[in-house]
Length: 304
Image (tube, rainbow, N blue to C red):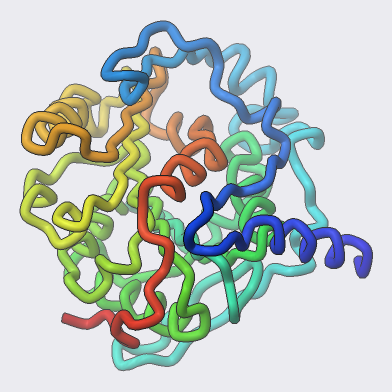
């Protein structure tokens, strides 16, 4: 364990470049989690259609399909750095899991679950092909922090709870940009938080994973600050049709040419495919080159 922590600390030092430099998460199982072949791309590579096959990407990746990833996709030593916590705030007690640096984190990634989920979903090492295990390892090994919280709803109350949780941790990591990943209905919170003028200066990026569009983003504080946006979507999503999210992607590019936005369409993928297949390292490293590097002078609390 001591040797693992020393190695993780060294990687963290490599990640914590000065503000003038490009930050980059160090590799972790990149070959296993890389995107399958690209079938089509346009917009200079910002829009990609990726080959997705259930036989290969579920049955070939999981020891028990949709339940337990093969061991080669996992590094379970990260569990030693995982904590189930609760933060008391003006919004009430906010239960959450945390992995990594609670203070002095170089970056913070938070996963917001969809309908029927809870804080445990984003901590499940075995589900979704081990992709949550990967983001846990990526953040902790690079001196960052990963959070997976509970929240009351997908409306104003839930957004307030998430904002309070982020206020708590960013006060302890004043230089850390925040990346918010929203699965399915969790996207409602991504869009609400994008409108938060106090939070926007700290946002490093938004990740919409199998979620829905909100054109209100085009007038949000996050949009005005050019916060990078990533859309991941399955072409056979019957909950939120891919065409509606593609329309927002196109709208962003039309209204603001050159805006940092990416779209990965997983061909034949369904509703949960983006959570399984999104390449966390590829996406976050792209956002790190385009987005906020942290603001120590931003507000201590993110309540508008």
